[in-house]
Length: 198
Image (tube, rainbow, N blue to C red):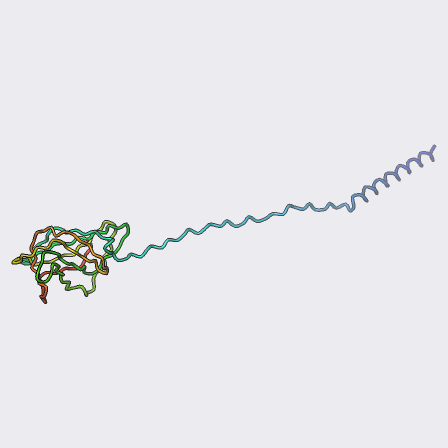
């Protein structure tokens, strides 16, 4: 009986040893392989579109197409028989423009030995002039000084050419005043002054 139990006990131990060996062989080494983490991708840097840049348009000189013309109120007399009136130029465009210089002015009227047109002298046309910018609806004036006493010639229209332009503006001579023509005078009492913003 003692030997029989011993044989069975050793057989059981041997079986257990074989089982342990089998488990170890199937599992390889006893150390577990590390678990691979999923690859991560850094987020792309956000890009912001640059705001478009705007360049202001340069202010150009006012031309006849930018301007409206009317005869203003009569101003104070310079001397007896020497009167003044303002020629009013209004920027009728939708953009600013500038005026600088002395406009050309012709008075158109009835027949005369020198012709129906009297070209008004521009004594300061070649002098440096102030540049004034006119926004839409803004005005500039040029003062017309004229001799009236002792004359019988009455203009009917004013024809004016803005400085730097070749096109003309026309407005009626509504004052009813006579103008003494001095077509050949070296120091005439009738002349036009420079444009000034108002």
